[in-house]
Length: 184
Image (cartoon, rainbow, N blue to C red; front, side, top):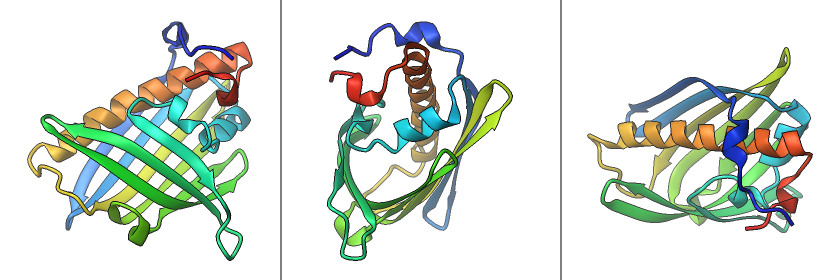
């Protein structure tokens, strides 16, 4: 097992754009960055729900669940989210659909989650020597988010998380490591 330390030295992640809008009570999130790692590696890292919690701070648990009755891939995640003084433990059960090395689509199951609606997508595209990583999400939480500071706080958290995840993926890629080899 390897500890995830020293990853900061690999930081060449370029954050291209981060955007958060609220339209009719629904959040629309867009983030795009350039990561110095192969698309195949990025895909395998992002879809590793049994270990994804090691990649991003604030995520307590992520794991795959047994397939549903129709054979769809299910996952569970629990994380702590804070906006200034307001903190909440958030749980999601979601369907995961991957298109290897290209995209990952996630659809939350509202009756088993803290969201009345939540769909997100990772797009992974090779561009020269780097990979363009795009994250899009649309969600409507079943919990209160402070309206005046919520979008600002979500944008700030998304920018910080994008930099962190990208840096950690670059660090692992440069050393030939996978998430399963990283200790908690």
